[in-house]
Image (cartoon, rainbow, N blue to C red; front, side):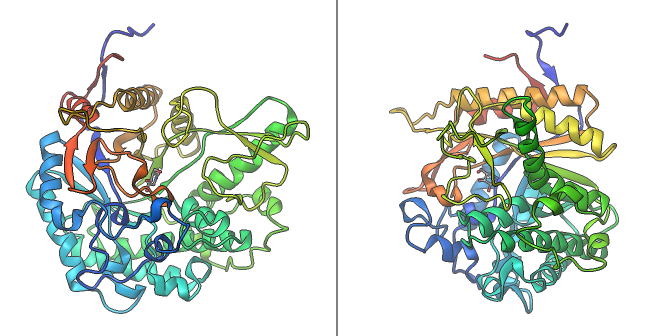
Length: 472
Ligand code: IFM
């Protein structure tokens, strides 16, 4: 039996960090040559983002990055995962690199390295240049080629100092929320388009892996980040298990099989046959998509519970991502149900076992592949008390439970090499605007004042000691 009162020790070389994304924090939307992305357009479209919020200013990180890096250093963070804005590096999505845009990331990377913080770069966290969307966006094959060119430009300039590169962040969201349910930019609602976008995102990933390998030193690590789903049937009944098989196909195997095995799952092709004939897949694509990776990033927040439709139960088919249309291209006859128990401010159930389940599944399916938890965290309705402090015991409990799950996975032989908390700062939470606060550092968006929450100090101590204390 394990001693519940003993702290849990993480491996000495475990990588601890925090994560952000360009559009969610940078602001400076029209500065130094940056052109609009789909998120600039979408957020300015009435009714798409709560409160009409946009990323125009966000946390003003573009101007305040030295103070933000000092903040990270003060918390003792050894690594920082951020994304590059494609429309800043290559405005309009094609043509030459924008020197001023790359200069910003150059300064940021030097600032990080100067404070002993390892930069971990993601190339695509959803900010597709609007010009490319106008030419078809991710439903157009050309977009994949433009992405690989952009990857090469970024690697040429920054590859001497960034050791870890991720191509895409959560392509499920880009394809299925962006082109399926339309709750994310560009807001299209066409299941066939969502599947074409999915394939072209994976093609972009594969082409970019090739471009990065050509431009980077041989020691560079190249990765992909997926938001895989811990899918659970509501009951053991065959119809519920069939619902779970189908959603597992569309959430997980539609990524893992092509990226790691060079094929799409036969059952997913069959399940989606009424939506598309998949004729956008060309000879050679799957070989490109399945280029070897050095690690896989996993983002995890909450599990997904599914059941077969029950005519006697008129409950709405909540899938946890908002919107009236389903993001899933072929989910007829399937209900999505919230898991029981405590929820975060997103309404997402807190369930750390889902993280353990996914990590051990990846250990079994991809033996030996190093894994990184590239996002995990929670939104709560945080506020400054009269003394200016921000107490967030729920977030500490959430982080504690999920780090304990990571520790359990490592003990079970899963090669988890690091953990990046989402997020460093409160920021622009996409369609929810600034109303949902995921940061361990509170941001007063009017004054841009940063205040580390209790969770920031708690996490800093975990990072400093490499020990997870017993639950409070
Ligand atoms: O804020 C997002 C992030 O951009 C991608 N992963 C999920 C987070 C919380 O919704």
